[in-house]
Image 1 (tube, rainbow, N blue to C red):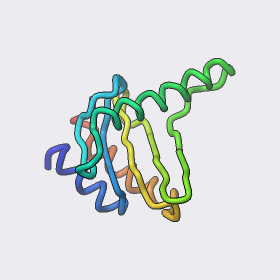
Image 2: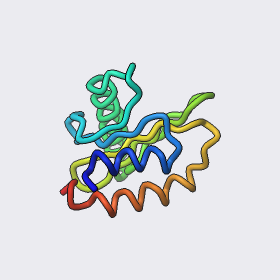
Image 3: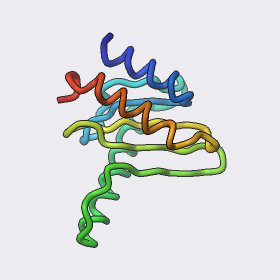
Image 4: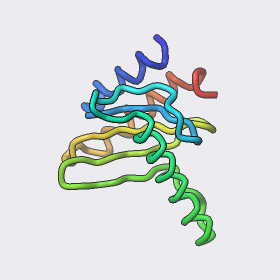
Length: 117
């Protein structure tokens, strides 16, 4: 299974509206996004959000975050590091349990490790 197929499977397993693997520069590595979404804008902004969290944490002399959550009434956007140079982004319904997502993301990260390093 290639990385693109794994991202599709991740989206289905997480019951997500969108799923993507993005490098630290904001470039899409693989994605399964709704057609109306600008992949370039989405990926760049997700990378910027995680980068901003890292900068804020280091300014406070804390370790950088490995995950950032953006929560609204309708959805949660989870941006999480996987590997040294990539992050996974999932957009899930607001009522989705984050505990369930941790296992799904962990299995995905293990399966995709070869493609990400």
